[in-house]
Length: 480
Ligand code: GLU
Image (tube, rainbow, N blue to C red; front, side, top):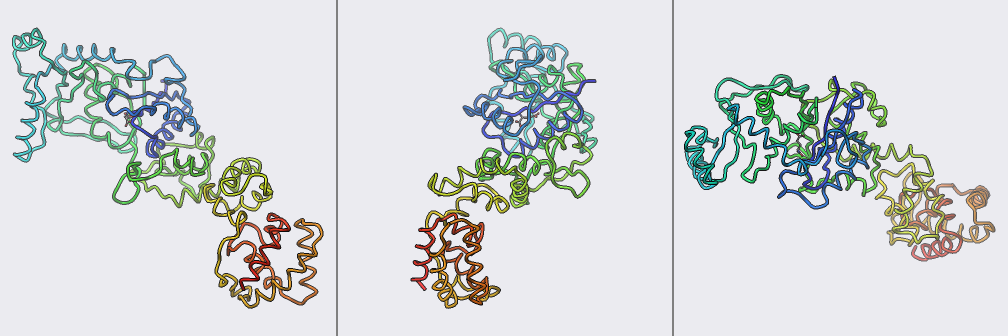
């Protein structure tokens, strides 16, 4: 039997990380099973639609490397893949359900429903439609239809027994039918509700495995009853636990949690994010943490999924990113780092290739590069206490002496290369009986104003160039 899955986002904004994870897991299971991955846009609720959101979904999935085999912008045999372009095909199925007695016309007005809802609240009950219109006589119904009274079509849920389904992760889940509400299938404007369109499309698109968040767990028994009433075989279901921002709340853009796009903009690498997200709720059951997409496509399975909600840990993501930064081919790193360097360094003024060699191994996220290198553009203000370093046995006084001594040595360097700088200084230090650290530490502080820098004194002197280096040493010396 074919293995067909779908990712079915509603275009209400960004691709949040929970959504990305659902898409990723669905994609991986599909590849592992040599199936077909479908993208369907669920835009029946046009009021909630955000302009441009559909294009954002395409762009985000492409950026994530989640290529779908069928979808609005790639085509396929089961299209159209945007629900608003399918709006006329749902009503006949609802009418079929009316004819078979599984659904009925409901003429209750909003005011009437609000009143009953209010009364239920006063009695401390949760409101459930009371099947009022199910019991209209044939004549009453015909008269209302003939008079053009607006109506919706409701599903006639059973009131006794239980309804349920087998979830691939959570196992058998049953609910009491007495708790089920007669959900609306077709709205007064003739368009399907989100629930109904979802069921009809999963069937018409021959989806065999439905994957989605656990927030749909309580809807699924109702969906299954609709499948049965239509004489359709329900798909398999896999509900995925929530991604939490902390112990109390779901990850959400509304609270400022980053979306996938935000992370890319901050300078997180696609492959690092994917690797991190893959392990957010799934485990390969060993200690290994680094996986490429191709590897995940080979090994991802339902057995490794975790039933409990997972916690989004930004620090852990940053750890992954640093690992991926180190592993990038150098030319690729240079290409990615350059625009971040150029946020603070005048283009053409510094040897960025050399700078990139010095920063690659310590880059956690690209957006930290500007603050890591901005001392090159301008010597920051710093406290002379920075010269104090226990292990190097330095303090401001020793620094003053060392800088005064090293200045003429530097002035004497003829060729401003790292090797010439290195050899000249080391030879001078050796001849003077001074300790390396007592010269190099103060020198690096004097020209960078920072306790931590990419590269040491020699590399920084090279990057700054002769004049700037000498000017900084003189300036820092004068402040001691
Ligand atoms: N359109 C739904 C959403 O964006 C997806 C529901 C489903 O996958 O069945 O949450």
